Image 1 (cartoon, helix red, strand yellow):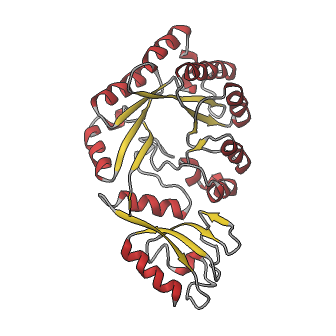
Image 2 (tube, rainbow, N blue to C red):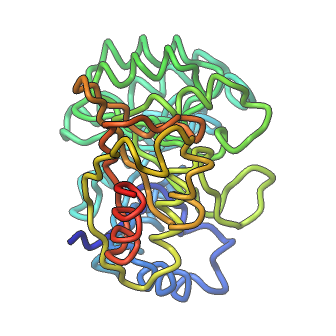
Length: 314
């Protein structure tokens, strides 16, 4: 049996959008199975507030940084204060930091200098870094390669499949957030969601989403959406992971995952499919056609698993 616990790795709980119900928002998340929160700073003021929240709640942690939009504020004095904040016990990362060549609220060289300073601080303290990157993929990857941080989270990833593979090859974590829900993101992001075996997925970037509304956002791929729906619509759910072998006379053989009813009707997550050859296909797309001798690696409630076992053998 699997007890599903979640950790919200990126939220801005200190934001004024939570002023009226910050504590209630935390309680709702806890009730939905979220066991920890990383409150991410974007300025000295925001970082101080994130630390205060972390010090007030045993399940909240803080990350500190000056956002690339405000890179001009990363003066030597500000960076010294940032280091003092980063040394506080409840601080677990540096970020969000990086480059934003889409909005260009700060000159590019100023952004790069601030980014390198943040990475140097992370190296000194042996802390992970949370990366903000918009339209600066080559520059961000180049600077990260030079700095070689201990751990990297590519927050709210918006790059191509090729860039994703580079990140994964380097051992970076990838956050799939708002960009993959945007129609304008195109097939490159859809392909990324099919192929990022090792990538993480953020459901909420609180309180920021496309359009600026404070609402939950789910990533594009059905598997991840199903997984998040399971997590957020149950207070504390017991799940089990099983391997289901498809027999030749099964009603499922020859049908796509979309048409099989596994996801929609049974509410089961297909984590991976093991082919007869031994090849593993992780997070298979909805159009994948189930074949005889496929082994479905699935996650669901016991009653759902039993129903699928019957379909697999009839």
